Length: 407
Image (cartoon, rainbow, N blue to C red; front, side, top):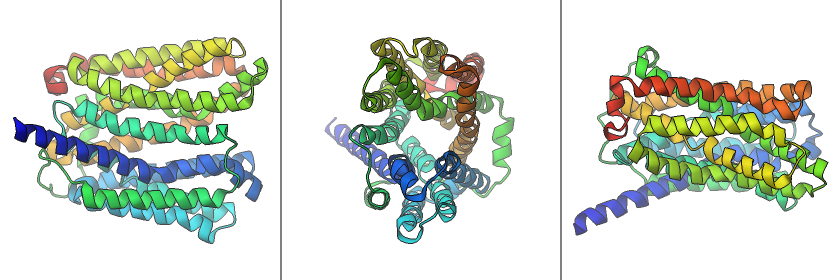
């Protein structure tokens, strides 16, 4: 019993350090959000320039993840050195901007490279998490997603306290933290007892995933979730700011509310991960999609109205919109071939982030056409598709492989 407790303690110590390592490394992605107002002033950025500065890292991530999936890099290269080297290269790409660049063009290239290398961090982190967990895999991956969610929320808290006056220190600090994350991974993180032998190179496996009905259903659920998630994260702060201006509230409260709304997803990921391991992944994801989809439908009716009611609905939305994220990844890790978990997770994330580019771009267009009262309703399409996919998966014989047979 004492040995078992010791092993369990070592396991969760490793997983907490893994979550910290990935969070620190992914900070280079979030750094542009925190520095965007200062960069806008320094480089006289247009709306298009600001959008591309944000989107370039996401495009790089999609390209890197898709290439990694085709080459099976996350399964053929040992996870610890891959995560370490990827985090270091992302840090170097990011720090090169304040060191060498004074205009948008080269900054976009370096932000693209930052995203490209981050494709070797987040999916690989999920793979390492999967090698340490089985019955509690939902909680484990939920811990990782929860940490990243809090990191996503952090720039809004900075903005609440006046934002960042200088952009270069932000990128220096973020790059230093990413390098620290790489060192933590190298010295303290390794794959767990459920790792498999290195498989042979099989570029066709990505196509095999696309033909596996059960994995396709799990990925459709994930795509429905991603259709909503990043557009909500990107535009709810603007939505809150516009609503608070109508009611006469100090704009700083919009930043505080945005931090709380997005940060609530960190708690949602942990709570949902624990529940999914006990109740089943399909049950949890369907419930989460129903709640988040309902919030997308009703939140616009509160625009410009009672701020407290608006924030309460947004907090529920923020909690639910990311609560299911880790469970789609857990599903894929349980449905795919064990020796290609890294490839399957990397392909899933590449498709999801590619889709977010569409919905992030469409929301401001809808806002101009129909106003904030109706714009977010468009996001409810994703949960509808996701619910149908996960309900079909729940009835499949393969559901017995999810969450220890709980579906």
